[in-house]
Amino acid sequence: MTTVVSAAEEFVPPSAPDFWQPLVGDGAFAITRSMIVMVLVTIGLAVVMMLATRRLSVVPGRGQYRLEGVYGLVRNSIGRDIIGSDHFRPYVPLLFTLFTLILLNNLMAIIPVVQFPTTSRISFPIAFALGVYVVYLVAGVRRRGLGGFLKNLVPSGLPFWVVPVVFILELVTFLITRPVTLALRLFGNMFAGHILLLLFAVGGEFLLLNGDGLLKLVSIPAFFMFFLFSAFEILIAFLQAYVFILLASVYIAEVYADDH
Image (tube, rainbow, N blue to C red; front, side, top):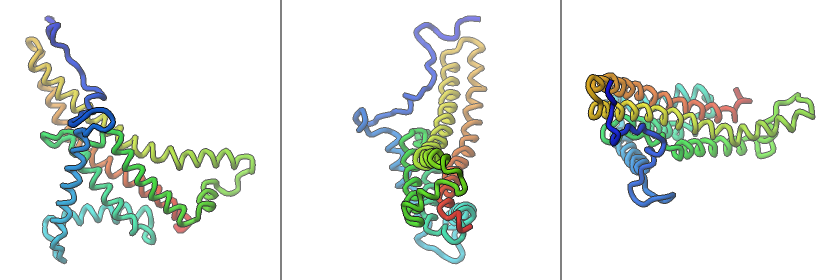
């Protein structure tokens, strides 16, 4: 079989640097594509919320009905069922905002022209996770006091010589492991999904334009996999937003675990 490409043309697979796309400036203070997408999504979400709720009625219109469906999912199926009916209400605005914001940013992976999920940049999942972390940390301290909060990290009935070890492990878990894993789970799934989309799209284009003979036909299944994974990415976008606020609710619920 003849060579796929000429020496001057070599396929370069997508990699992590492809996600760093500065538009203005360079370095740590550059304005990147992901920042612009995040701003546009935030503004778009705010506009949709205002338009859908400016004329609320007992018999909802189409926009109000759909928005209430999403709100009901977050409020009832996650907030109330996990945190508890006595304590969930103050956290519903946070959970609803995080769910819609993360979902829309995830879906940017398949929106034509944009095709860039901001959650595939680690800084945004870290910011979301830190917001959740501050909320459940403050809730725990306010409910039990700092001393009671730290004491609650260690189960009662342990031998005295085990207590320091368990306390350190639980403190590391609470202060570091939880927010880090919460951020990495969202980032890792969206990053991997977008890498696959790029690989099939760029690989299919390369084979179509530079492949020799029958190798051009290989671009057909590559493009097919691109469209298949694009549809699958919709499911992943929803699941990752759902799992994120689900875990956030579980962490917050532990503050009130003694009331359940």
